[in-house]
Length: 168
Image (tube, rainbow, N blue to C red; front, side, top):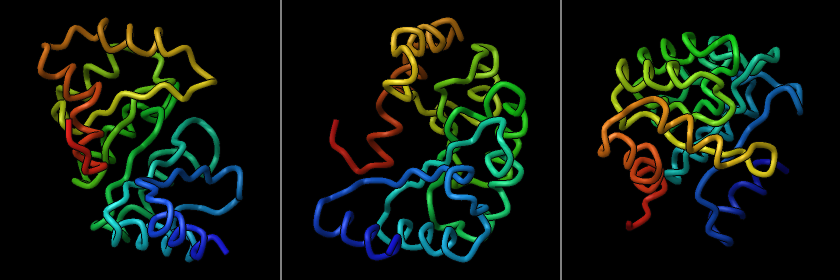
């Protein structure tokens, strides 16, 4: 049903992306159903956002196993790997040009700055994970990373607009 639901969501309701949370449904990124969902999303130019934090099956290096199978699909690593795996998330993105990092719940502004320095601002996306996180705090982390205005604009809205094929 997941495959049929994704196709209907995209074709009937105009969905623009998919969020996957491996620990909730107990399927790793390289399982056949998850790979099929990622392929279908990629065929429809829909990015796939993975919950990517400190839980088993949600670690950047674990998610990378599936990423390597779908190089045509844009993948977003939500939370940039969480508290302890930010460097791994950056390394996964460096090895896979279809990977973007999303900043919410990344606790370190210096980690966000490092991602921008190593990947370029075009591969970093702002996020809030509302209603879980305070969006004002998430904005301040970007500001505290001490990036130039163009990098901030790319992170705050230009990058996601490009990925979702939106006019800004």
